[in-house]
Image (cartoon, rainbow, N blue to C red; front, side):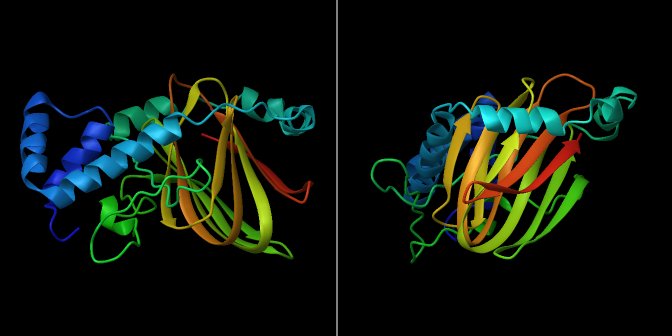
Length: 249
C-alpha cells in the first residue's frame, strides 16, 4: 500500500462503483501499467467484486419466510412520513462503499485476495478508510448483542440511498446472521475488517453469513425509490432463533 498513491486508490474505487469519468479512467490505467503493486491491488478488488456478484441465489426455508412475515408490525409503518426526500436534499450523492475481500480460496468457494506488502494480511483500513467512520452518514440503529455464546454489536448506517450493516461479533461456536430486504433493495458487497472464515450466501431477497470466533465486517446495500424501507435481521445458532429485529430506513 505504501507504493500506491492514495489518489489512485480512490480512482480504483470509483471505477468499481462505475462513477469514474473517461479522463480519470485513462489516467488510472496509465498509472496501473507502470505500477505492478497497484495493478495487483486493482486485479484483486475486481476479482473479489465479481465473485460476490456471482454468488448463487438460495431460497430461504418456508419456516424462515413465515417468521419474517409474522414478525412485521405493518401498522407501525403505515403512517410514517417518507424520509428519503429529506436526505436527498441534505446530502449530495456519495459513491458506494462497496469494496469486498474474500481471504481464502478453499475447495473452490473462497477466493484469496492478496496484496503484496511484505505480508499476506489484508487490513481493510488500508483499502479505503474505515467503512463505519463517515462524517456524513446517519446512524439508523444500534443493536447490542449479549447471549451465552455470542456477544458484540451491530449498527446500521445510511447516507443517501446507500446503507450498510457494521457487524462486530464474537462467539465460540458457529452461528448464522440473516438479513432480509424488500425487492427494491440490492445487496452490493461485503467489506472485511478483521474477519476470516466467513461463509456468505445470497438468496432471494436475503443475505446469510455464517460466523465463529472474532469477526468484524460490513454488508453494503443500495435501494431504489423513496419511502420507508423495512429490513429484518435474525440470528440463529444450532437451528434456534436467538434474536430478531426490524429496522426502518
